Image (cartoon, rainbow over all chains, first blue to last red; front, side):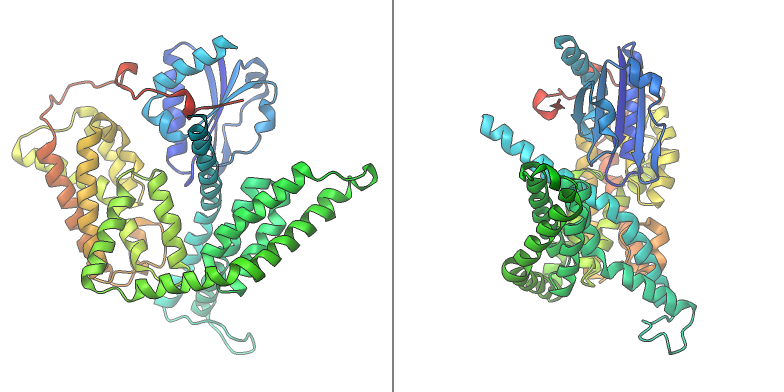
Length: 104
Length: 370
């Protein structure tokens, strides 16, 4: 499965990056391709490339705050979740994502 | 059940708007706070008229004051923008200006920002105009109507009660006696620390910012301390393990500490996450008690911090910085001792990789799918 995502938190210096790391590790462990863009206080980094977006099966928004650029996902199923949940249960979250995508 | 779920969603949305605004606010407050504090430390004062001579420190002090005076505008604009996107900016800005004008302060900007945002969103979604006026809708009609409406609401309905409330709250907090201060510091300390920079911490942070914008700086010093006792305490506990020959950390966790401690110096708790999630309840318990003790001490010693972030680097700006440092050390020591006693001894080479089965279940109601 190809996943694209955005991570963003309130202070934009810690949770954003921890959530990204956990999500990427968990997704890769489950055998998925994933690209996560971070929207921290420093601004947007690791912008989702056009190819990843084109091939994506699902989009995840891991954020406590409003994120920019959601319109890129308008063709996709979008799953939104607070950063805390992904930090605590990344593997379970990926399982849920699989379940949701399978259901269509 | 459906209703309950719905309420949860509404609350989550409200929270998300506040957090978005706070995320815009933090850099503004930190830069303004530092300028104000450094300027005042070095003898700066407000530049009343540019015709009089002024020096470098006067400029810093004045800039800081200008920035901090604008907090209601930043919070109002941020919330309204989060709710209504671009069209929210005009009424959100106005609501903040009105709050300053009416002395309704941060709380005025906060509440007004929500009303301005939802009002604008309502107009944006529901207002139907003839085809020839489509272009005028975002340019003129929505900003004009929403700004006018929120302005009238503030001046004639909400502004004065909020100003009275703000005033009463500030007077109450200024008049606390020692035992009340102790309780207040304890509560703020515990609440700021228990979820390690999560939502509870951020709500407390927003409230303390509102106090800070009215010149009540003591509670913010408590929050800063509470955010730092965890990395400091956990590092102290590491040295206990050397002295008392009881291993409480695995090798991986010791590695974690090496980055968690410097992050802690900068007031970032999150570096400790790997350790915390390996042993959640023992960590929360020790952090909570340590932060409570440190917070209570900081309050009764009248420590104040004019900046809301920066960790040890913010110390130069504080009133009674030495007392703050001592309170921080005592709080951290409490965390260390409790953690050291509670934690079970572990094998240093034990590899603890979190497996899916150890994780908390993910509930579908926590996800928003579209």
